[in-house]
Length: 242
Image (cartoon, rainbow, N blue to C red; front, top):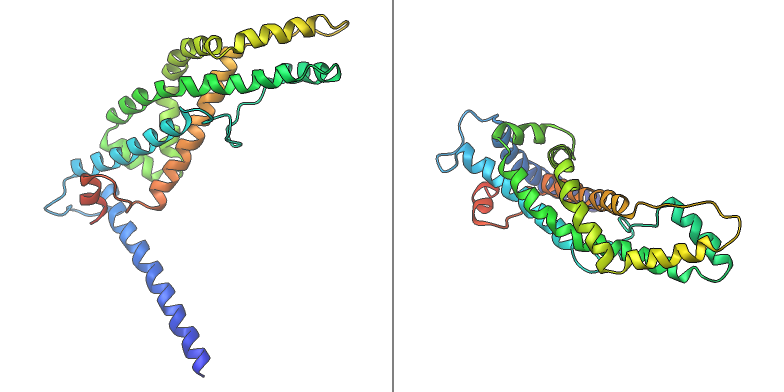
């Protein structure tokens, strides 16, 4: 009997904690969705919209800071940039003659180029978030778990590609990737009966860098949805703490 009562008490405690946490989150999100006819006298819809934007801004800045540093891409298995398929074929052939090391070096340099180029995304995120309307905020919440990420993709992809292209092109040269590619291709082209390979490193790295940025942005968004009570600025404390 004692064991049963103890088990029942433990169950009630767990249910109570879960309900309290969920209730706190739902209370705030009802404000976001406009389910309450009035926000509190201390909060306006502007406060709520700005707080949501702040949360997204912090998430975006975290992503850019994480990826825009040495080994941000290279040491991260989830977003590490592999060689393009046609260069992977080159590596296999060069490996047979003991020359795959230079191709491995090229792969590292592709990731270095992405790391150098990533910080350019910060200002684009800031502008996209500034341009959000309160209706955008409501739609994003009502949408899938990655709806903010999809919003950014739609708004930013073209301009991000345009701005990252020259930076990646320059960084590929600066980190030695272009020189490494030339050395690799010189060795490869001297091997009889191999097919011609013409990789587009710039376009490839830009695409993979953007994939990595949006991959982690989706994770940050999921964290915002999972834990909206996380307080990091004065306004977030005011809004999320209600």
